Image (cartoon, rainbow, N blue to C red; front, top):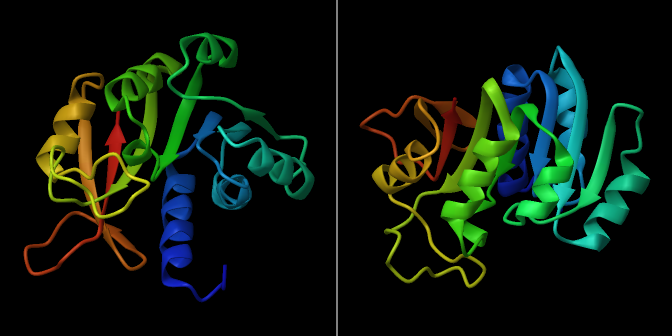
Length: 189
């Protein structure tokens, strides 16, 4: 992607935001080609290890070649597969950027994230705003896009505290009435 691409800049901003919150053992679920691990480690303090997981073997192969450091590892896996998540262990921080809308069984995915998160840990989960869970989505790769209350309700079934922030451009903030936002970023404890 062109480094000036707005979508890429917004995605990088989410990783930078998450890096200030990440600590200990970190899981980047649906890590793609792995560039987020470098952003997390460059900014984040207190990160001991980052495990990047993606369902696509080609992306993981690229990540292993491009971002090979002693503090990270990359694995092929599915966040909805109970057997796979049993092998991962638990994490202090989980990062999931624009993943949930691509997963058919979003309830199972969120349940597995909770199972992977250590007590006292933090999950940072982002997704675009949409017209609603049961409304056909214009993006052919998305099963759904949530309204804010639907997203919070889904996450609240597994996490005791859910805070929803909004993102427009490179800003991530508490929502303001006079702004239109494109993405939600949930902090789940």
